Length: 206
Image (cartoon, rainbow, N blue to C red; front, side):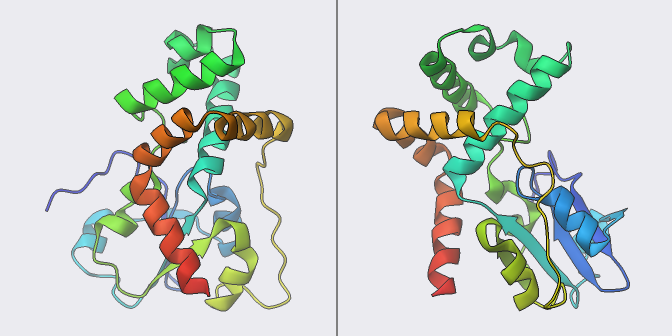
């Protein structure tokens, strides 16, 4: 079986607590690493060879369209900050009209998920492998889920780090997608597997 390692530099291990964390960008990875003291990158060969069968394996899943909006803002922020960022040469970045920027950005995603902040969540090795002892954490209920799986203490409080500082702009993106079902439907196709995973997780919570 061939595995997609393109974005799997965000997977971490904590040997003492026997935790494997499959990090996905824009899904509170920085916060999880901090609070679970994850400082060692996962050896994927050992994982595939089955050396971590008894470890708890966790991944955080986020509502796909909200994550898409956050990913877009992250890319724009980085492109403005770093002169050599690949997004600077993209049509969406050079376009001044807000609606067109989002439209062209989605078209870019249809060609290639060129940045990890917008890659489908299902491409994580967590979903590529036949995981044993695996737990999906709901981004929107992250603290309670971590407590449910005994990953943090009951009295522990988590503050999500690196929150978007431009929530008004994110709401503007989400509002546009409500008004433009054509664009929203494109995202539903692009992230179909992510929606399937997210909705199944919600069903299992009830």
